[in-house]
Length: 498
RNA sequence: GUCCCUAUCGUCUAGUCGGCCUAGGACACCGCGCUUUCAAUGCGGCAACACGGGUUCGAAUCCCGUUGGGGACGCCA
View 1: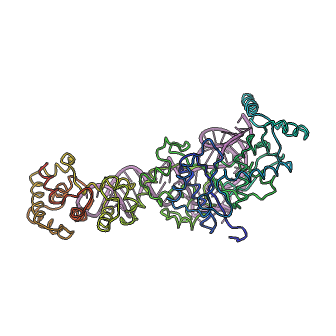
View 2: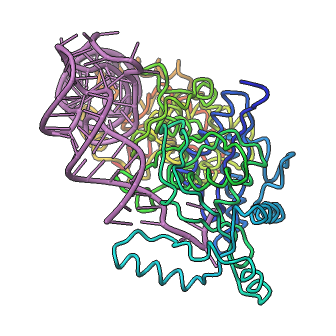
View 3: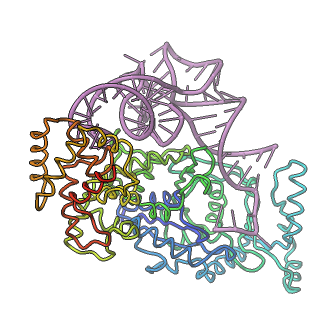
């Protein structure tokens, strides 16, 4: 990239709610673009809506982005040379630019009251006309303006929009042009002196030297207004790239009705950041190599290109996200999964909250054993339940049936007897014992393994016994919050219950 | 109502200069194999260029229209 025009992008949410997948994808694409070109990613907070902005949302936002690994190098909570990065801390700046526009007559005072405008709007709608400001205060003589200002009449500041065409080249959508009459004269500063979104946005992007504005396509029509403001400021607008909306499975805009949509919720349910990022990146963007969909954040960053971003809206598919999460869980070793899975195990009372080498080594192997059965980390403790065996009532019918036939019972009893004579149980000794049972009873295949599995787990199916049994045996000797019963004792208990 | 955007399997998409497309991949679904079982995995199958006109020797790809979807029209962001 041209060093004179470094890539600078920003994520600029308003702290009025939880961060949801749509916003996260916007943040992600910004981060990706910056990462790809060695640019700067900054975090700005648009908190000019005093009614709805809350500090806790801002904290949550920072936490969520950090968890995802979408790190920014400038912004709230970390400063930078173009700060402050919270719009409410930048009012002086906006005032200065507003004064300049007014002095240059690129903006004018509008004395219409909110009620008056509301009424006019209502009438226009009633007459099926396009509701827009009629420009009533555009040409009030200077004397009268002064007089009304002196009198203390409240006013807003409006941009004096020129006639003609306004357009820009969107990096995703291409050239977009409209006639400026469609824009009418947007309010820059409210009657209480506070600046409006479109105005702040332009001033900020300009002052923060933003090179690319990457945001949701809801802003497509704002962009014309903003381009006009840049024009009035005699400034070069940044490049724009708009991202299509993410919709719910029913084709409607994503909302709580669609289940989990806030990323905090995905975290709580045990989704991996890698999976979320991978999935979200594929929602709108496609990798240059067809068929290569499982990509780590860094790999995506290397391949990212706005030219490969889709224009049409995408539907969020929880099933594919689950598949992606499963894939990431399965390609991550249990030991590496443990730090993120620990809270779930601790909450379920299966692991101590504090790491401990002996227990963690074991727990990592337990995770490896059961992880192929889960979509998210929060399902791990339940799957690990197989180590603890069922209470007598929890023995499933399949297992009960396997232990109820004389043949099955014979196998199981022989197996348990031999288990009880054995000391520590490794994979080898387990295999040896099974071999002895096989020789003693003459059973093999499913007639051999099914009763053994039933006696050991109380279930008709489950993870590989050769791995499970040694883990149970080992777990039984570990100081765990919930003790793992030794295999022999457990099998005896199950047999007695059937 | 006016304006803007958009349209390939159920879903995400490849298709970037029109021919290599009897439209490729992934998820989901179905079948088969592997395995003591389940899961995982391997293999195979089902399934789409919204519709109608043009342009062209040739169109998923270009143009126009229709229809569907989304958005804007705030002293919200």
